[in-house]
Length: 457
Ligand SMILES: Cc1cc2nc3c(=O)[nH]c(=O)nc-3n(C[C@H](O)[C@H](O)[C@H](O)COP(=O)(O)OP(=O)(O)OC[C@H]3O[C@@H](n4cnc5c(N)ncnc54)[C@H](O)[C@@H]3O)c2cc1C
Image (cartoon, rainbow, N blue to C red):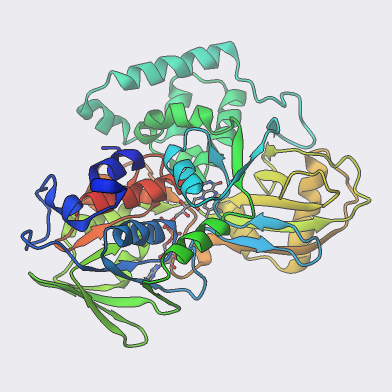
């Protein structure tokens, strides 16, 4: 079920617009409520200082609940990480960046926190092969367009059993079987891999067909947060001034009974509260020792959920580089996406590049000179200067981050029940994170999951 932030706030807002704990926690009792539903929680622990954790803490705080946020890394923000380059003075995003028009919840949070967005109105171009921009608009043939429309129509009318059956296939194989032509398959792979962070042969056909409307919108006008996505993290932290925020100390143990939840950290902190929101990626949940043990279906689903491999880089190019204008290129060179880190109207020359899948591993494993050579090749290959002087390469391979271990949640074939299993509360522990909401893999999903987690308490 999708609950918008508006609906949550409407259901939670007491007289005079002030959120009250009583109001939230006395409404709509749910089957998975904590064991002691008579009393409203007064204290909460939030695991994870990414967007979903901080926004959960913000919502809980608004209801008068005292919150302790615990983040494993020293840096808050998780997969939101704005990097400011000292030479070019340009901020680039190493994680979450684009907000599309359909991302209503995050847009509303941005407004509430007095932040602004900047539209990036650049027409995307697609490039297959060396300098090949024969179809820069990435238009599918009429035949493929009609086929795509047909299969998404078929999907809408399928029952759960048929959808489950389709979940055994990957999207690439399924589209090929449906008769989509080779060139169009390549193009669709380029287009959709921006959404999934992997090639579409890694994505469940059932999952992807339910995403078709979002997939089609993902290249429409997109916005960035003015000052960088980390401005959102800082603004939330600012709002949590009266809460305790612990960073650089991973949680290692969680135990709970009828009355409370206790967590222990690597640095031997012990914190007890009435409830806990666990807002960490599914693939690190089993690093924590749980008492009682996590339900088997949840453990298994956490193991089954894949994570895409994404390296995001930023680099400077010399001002002599010719032909540099606003651009957004998706191609099948070693990096899949290339675009300026901010609109190119001030002569700055910082470029963002993203490599996915096996190529992300290659980037992650290569030295500075190799990375430079790859990037030179990519720039030349998409038709920009062959002699660009590249410097200041920085970046993150998200699959190598120890407390995140992946780019974004990836629903591969066989993942039909995963999301609902992972979303279920476990006694006094509730779950949030981008992997749990619709449009997973987005900042929108992180916000939506926090609303849903707090609403389910
Ligand atoms: C390269 C890249 C590009 C992206 N681009 C976009 C985009 O353009 N638009 C968009 O909307 N979204 C984008 N996303 C997705 C978006 O960034 C994420 O969906 C969102 O930030 C996830 O937030 P989260 O809170 O669910 O998880 P996270 O940000 O991963 O937060 C989880 C936190 O839990 C912490 N943690 C883990 N284990 C423990 C422990 N034991 N104890 C304490 N803390 C722990 C982690 O350190 C982490 O900080 C992108 C992601 C990546 C990686």
